[in-house]
Length: 288
Image (cartoon, rainbow, N blue to C red):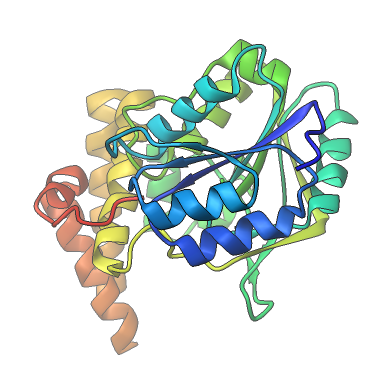
């Protein structure tokens, strides 16, 4: 590890030592790295130490946001620019430098992300509109094209600016998994910052690294959305969002494609029960 200053990579892992090894190898020792291992895995500890990374074992899994905050504590203030990197993502160490240059070229850029692609080269969407009750109603009635095309960047490979971190603060630990980076970027945008998407840089993201169970991933995703909507729009906003999401799922379930019908029915069941209530009924054996 060369120990270059000004940027520090932070990986929050839960098992998946093989993915973690590939992730750390991609950085090629160009940047200091801290690995927070929510699984307390001996294999992850070994991988991190072989790569020259600082290894942090929180002793329990309190979720991704808490893992990020534990990593920020380990890095110490004043925080440098921090690259949040999923263990199932690989980005070239040189591209990290280019990403930082892009971030630093804009005085009010709080966060930057490269383009993302699957292992087979399939592009993944990076920019999404902030969730809102109005946006969910637009989607439900078929007017989603009218929604803003950008708002926040997905957190698989996300560089956070030191000055924005100092102003906005760490992640909100009410988010266990999903939507925590959405919330942080919303807070930044509300404070006058912007985010920047660097399409010319590409990182590989396998995805689905948080759990082997697609039902659990789906439930946690929507639970994260519920937490976000309740935080920003209150109880009435959440009930409006939930009604729109349920309507959207029911309308999709009436479409002729069998596969989409099944997915839509599953989503309708989640929103009929309530995403966080539904997620609480599922086994939590492999949270991210």
